[in-house]
Amino acid sequence: MKMRATIMMLACAAAFSAARMQAQNAGADVFNGKCSHCHGADGLANTPAGKAHHVPPFTAPDVLKMTDADLTAIIKNGKDKMPSFGNRLTDAQIQEAVGYIRTLQKQTKQD
Image (cartoon, rainbow, N blue to C red; front, side, top):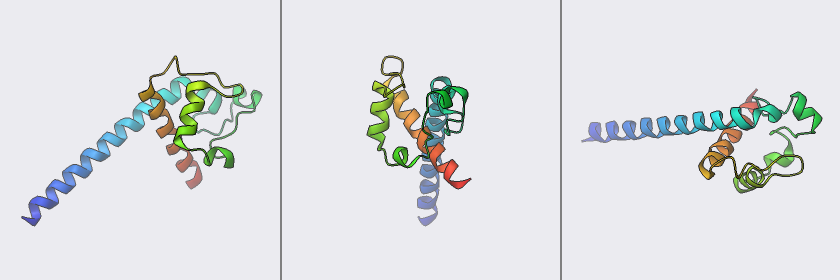
């Protein structure tokens, strides 16, 4: 009985991990297609467009303090020089992008 429970737990963990990886890949696709031009592939905004528009890196303290709802609103409605993507991305795509931004923030902190 314990073996069966262990197998079920491992199967659930593997399915969860696969789903999370798929969502992360979808977020990366959205980000690379719509955001990386200004924000850079690593989220540090070290691009010509990012520098020209004074885009803050995702690791800036003010950005790190933002909630997922804050990031969602900015992507959807735009802010300052950032255009609105609410008419170009679905709500699901925006959520995927926010998730990917969080991944970039974690990766950059570790480097």
